Image 1 (spheres, helix red, strand yellow):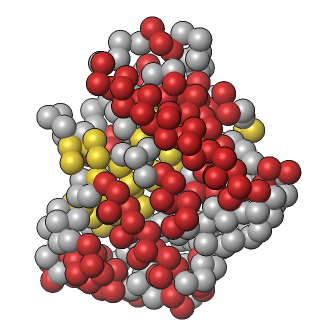
Image 2 (tube, helix red, strand yellow; image 1 turned 90 degrees about the horizontal axis):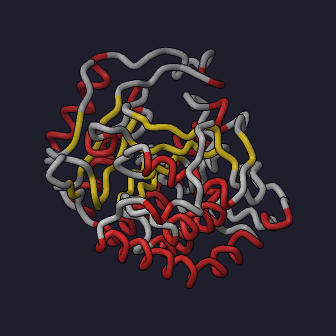
Length: 319
């Protein structure tokens, strides 16, 4: 784990006056909402599972994480989409656990086996400040949904100490609107998955009941909060929505339904990352459909659907 910056010395950072104002504004918003978020964790409604366990007393729901924070790594990451990684790297914090149960999860040691280290609110805040000190373009919260209460507490401390770079919410897109609305004004860039256009597939593959309904409501709310992706003069994201979609074998992700929704219910100007890196992992290795890699033809069909629905902003991958 990287050496964190100290909260006691964080205010010596060279922060532009407007950034300092924005940081304090975020800290104030969080302070106003933190008790509401803790109430959601007290009878857990942080995600659509609504397990009802008391996370503050370390009771465990489907994510198997208590109050937190628990994370597996903190680093400058250069493998995200160009506006996220930029030229200095994205300050990624990979949180342990997940509210989804994807049979093919390529990060399953973190998400399903829950490899990671237990930290404190202050310790997490210090890691955020360390990433800023090292030049990160943003703080990239990877799989934050189920640890929202602890993360908000850390963000409050970090913002009070001068955290001024954009905050990226990088999730599986299976969110509670009640919780998501509490992030309004705090998150600068949303980077959710739109995994499925079909609920039967979502249930079979990720054990995510009503994924499509929850995901579409999530995407609408995120778009309402931050709008279309905006970048600065260096091409780094400062605000907006960037949606990821992973193409699955045999079209099992319901790609056409996903793209139709984005084009018709959000805007064709939405930025979308069409990912080709599927490979069998975790419990998918011996599956009759998911036990193989994606074919070139399957990916090219998804590229054709991008064009069909006029989704021209974003990124495809060589295949």
